[in-house]
Image: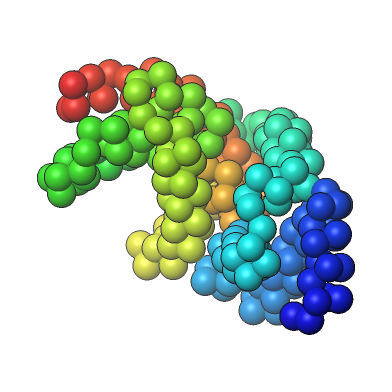
Length: 240
């Protein structure tokens, strides 16, 4: 990068719209590539957008705080996007109501296993206490997970990393895993994706089938509510 280009970059990097525009362009390109690859699980737009933007930030020596000043509008839209999940839920309310009993059974089983298994495995590996607490709510949407972690003495930033990692891994594995297990019911597939992989899994479910996306959205809300109740109990029981 010559001095003139560097000076131009320094000027542009101080403009908040630069990082917002860059984020949208990167995601649009990656999502287009994902479409051309027929939504292959490994072509997850969130995963590849993250490492591409991270590489750009590292290459340009841009602090995350500077990037977030520009991209925070996208962060703000997470709230309205979550609320918007009520639209497909309302449109498919009859299907959801008929599946309520098995959903509740899956909810309790999935929430408890996700929390307990993560702590037990990490504890067996000798993970420090603060990390165990941060890991417990990993399958819940980020805002709720960070609040649970902070209230119990964990590290909210570490919890956010765990949540995103869990969501990406779940979104990649859910389709091939369900195919391997020969689970064809999109209600079950979607609910499992939302329960284990929160928002990123729900986005993947909507790419596959609208009914799957609807049930994934239901799972996000129910799992957030239940985990906020059981996570403190599990943490005190297994850690403290």
